[in-house]
Length: 497
Image (cartoon, rainbow, N blue to C red):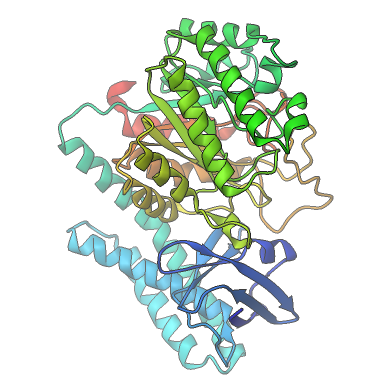
């Protein structure tokens, strides 16, 4: 495969985990099959692409806050190694300058300090580029340019969010927007205080493993009690995701048919019918499937994943269900496409559903952030905004599910716990979770195509998917991200509080 070679500056830290996260993206926004190797101060990427690509690289700032950075488009098979630090500085400066120019064209006011950062970042980068053959001179200038660009981009977040919010308000329509949490556990006294304003809805997940522990034997009591409790709070109810087929929800007996796809389809159809009959007319929205494009406990080919997804929707509709249906997709940036055996990006799955006209009302993007698979590596405000713009081309209302860890330590209740023995390069703490809410939630709330956002885990004390990603700590106490989330929602939806 064609290769890209980089020199790694001492200013950058590239770990083995980073090498598994780094990937290439083509001009069509799709991730390319990528193999990454590191040797001393060289990073070599083998990319299944002949044209230019952008390279996505994990980065930690001086405070160890993680974010994914991007280079500009680079030529393949370079004879002289690129300086990775210089190219990341170039990519960040390009984004900073592009965003500033867009603000100026839209006659939005920019702070003097933001314009000063743009000038400083440009000057430092120009000097770094001129001296790139002398790394001892170039690298400090490149890191200064990079940090100035990132600081300036951060300052632009509020400008863009405010402008987008005002544009939506000028339309003069009352905006219906679902704001809630996803319950994978029974309702408890610790959880109830969360289910107040500014939240207006709750996603209740009927775990297939618990609801059908034996073939044909259904247990709905926990889901019934949770739905009743949510209704008593006066909140809208979303039932689902009904099918995820991950290790958290796949019944043990279903593994008997992991090599019999037809039997899997039959099991899905039978369960769908029983579930619809039991919960019909008791919920507002039906969330039929999540993450089937990526993480499933049963191995499937891509065409089987798509076939299963369509079969689920048709089974629910075939049971006489006429209510709105939602579907969501894991890793919406498509990082899993670095593997040779994956060709369908998440948006391809969604596009096929839209074209098939199977009756999908809303499409969801699963933003499960973290630094260990199957989580998506941390992104910034404008990464999220760009992705939402891209998915908006489908012409279907969007919703987002969101989570992020608040600690790096082992989590015995999480099925995706990496069981680290030492602290990672990233700072993972309650502050990290709060800062992610502060930077990402405004991008979601102010996007005109998005009609809902749900935090995917509530309590760290109950079994869950992602480590330390709940809003309540193991003792049932709210984390600081809850206060920040409430503050941000009140800012953008004061009329609904």
